Amino acid sequence: MIYKKPSKLKKGDTVAIVSPSWGGPSVFPDVYENGLEVLREWGLELRWQNDKNNLSLFFNQKIC
Image 1 (tube, rainbow, N blue to C red):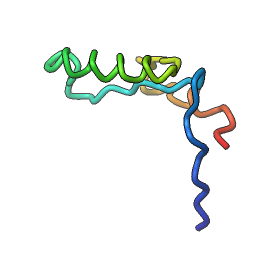
Image 2 (cartoon, rainbow, N blue to C red):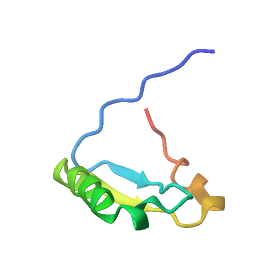
Image 3 (cartoon, one colour):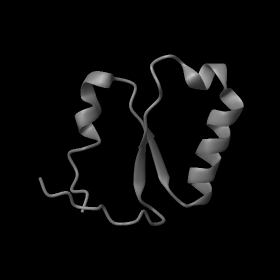
Image 4 (tube, one colour):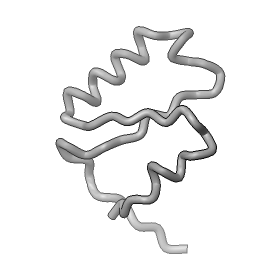
């Protein structure tokens, strides 16, 4: 199998925020919020997907 390395993220790119099923953000909200803030500081657009059955919505775009 040939793997293709995706290009580096740049300002304005959109990333999906996928949360662990055990509820990590509710257990460690400060860690979660700090991580989101770092992504925002990098200039990334954040999207959340709450419906695990529709994760394909994030992956229908061309990655490379």
